[in-house]
Amino acid sequence: MNAAVPMAEIWRGPFLESVHLGHAVICGADGEIVQAWGDPTVVVMPRSSSKMLQALPLIESGAADAHGLTTEQLALSCASHQGAAIHTDRVNAWLGNLGLSDSDFRCGPQEPSDRPTMEALIRAGEKPCQVHNNCSGKHAGFLTLTRHLKAGPDYVTPDHAVQQACLEAFESVTGESSPGFGIDGCSAPNFATTLHGMARAMAFFAAAEEGSGVRASAAARLAKAMRLHPELVAGEGRACTELMRAMEGRVALKTGAEAFFIAIIPEKKLGVALKVVDGGTRGAEAAITAILVQLGLLDAAHPAARKRLNAPIRNWNGIETGMIRPGAAFR
Image 1 (cartoon, rainbow, N blue to C red):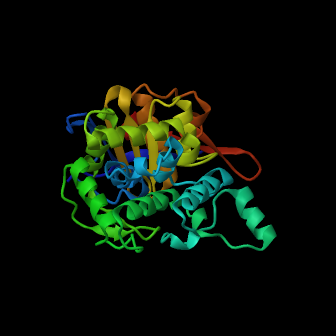
Image 2: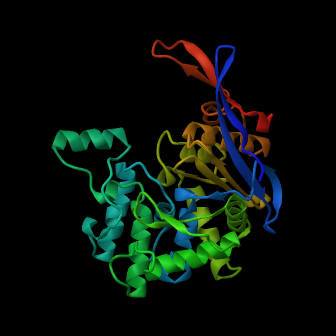
């Protein structure tokens, strides 16, 4: 087992103050490793970076087409959104089309990270609903699949038909049997795999083409929806949205809790998966930015890249005190 490598460094003046260590893998369409940092065999919890895999059965089953889902809804099924109106209005409309309500979700209520929305709730004396949960788009997809399969309402239980379909898809595209699962923040099972397995899955999505088989067509549609609607995948100010916009739809990106990140790169048929071991989001954002720059997909001078790589750190008086730099792994 190879040790984690430095992926991002925090400098204060001339001193190296902190280091984010991690692992990363780039896979080609054949599932083989093109480049790796650290240990490709490390077992990981992909968290929300696996949402595209969890959305595969939504399309493969025929549920998406039976319910006339749009590219916006497919993007939301892969999203970790901010709970802004642009997200919740669409998810509520989706629920309404199913004849369902917020109480049918099993993700739990969450304070929206979109500040204007949260402030509006406070002013109105209202509490957040389940639709504000960052995973409500994924759960709307689960509910759509549940309806299509005529399954029971508790769709997040591991033995439910929806989750069993997710597990089959997950193991198929990672090319590995999952060693188990943990319960995610939204109460659905989150299946474990190796980092190589996740990169292999992302390469599958990157190489997939519509019309080339049921699973590949589903993967292609999901990746395309993410690239078409970066504002729905995350939200304003978020790394996924800003970096996808910076690359003008060439790459689909998805973060996961505890410093996970993936990239789907159709033009190169490459998939990327990375994990920063301390769970620090700034480290994962710096690392994915460095990899995208290295691959020639992102201009290092673009404001979205500069915000996360070689970015100045300022104190409360606006004085520049240090910098976030790429780690030794990327130099």
